[in-house]
Length: 337
Image 1 (cartoon, rainbow, N blue to C red):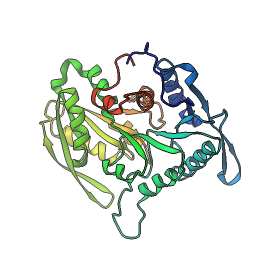
Image 2: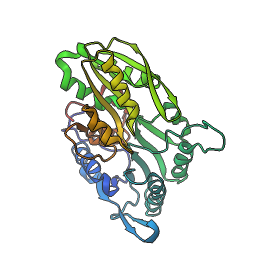
Image 3: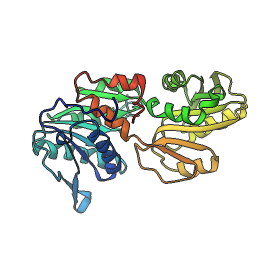
């Protein structure tokens, strides 16, 4: 699957990569990657326009024709999640009315997925309501997303979905930075629910794993025991799906240090960074690694791994004969990428 290959795509009308303004960099990088992989005449790119009015009303306007094309809409949630969720529906509606033959939503980060069940009476299952809100449009065929908070959320989708795991991004970074001393690395989950994710990383890297147990007392989080590999004298890479206020992950780092860890690195797929997150992370003095699924402020302690190639290959595998997203998940991105 080298860059010199030229694939014939399955959709006769061609592909249109359409992006929101704040996803333009990632979407355009994916477009450039795809230009080297498929016939150019089958591919188009543009950034959708948004006219703005009072009361935060917006009007999405496709800037090029999408008639009879399979549109891949790169959509972000860098603003207010409730506002962005409704604007998503308006954007899909605009593309459908403009004659798109099919629409696939490329949303590396999806909001509301932590609200995936009724944990108390009289509350909505917001993850379900969010997904069903945009899936009701006839031309929506698929969702491509990354590291959903819980695997069982896949059961909410009524249309096809590709749930891409974060290990495809983190494993190459770990090997590049610690390839000569992987015996010193322990991949750590900040809670028992992260065991599957950290096991996937540890298996592919070839190092040991551990996870912590925690208990919530109201909004406070207390870390308890460390299970799995010993962390004494080790470099511990904590991996989570989301870093929000960063209270749990920084407390996990403190617990590992107290148990003798030589160094602790924090990592997560989605950098929500809400509330005092930046201050907490800066005060911790720890290295932080994340992806560009959401926009972040630049800091010396923050490393941001790009997702453009990952998204491009997911789009490609959905558009070629014998394409397989599972191949990427199993074997990672081609080295030529």
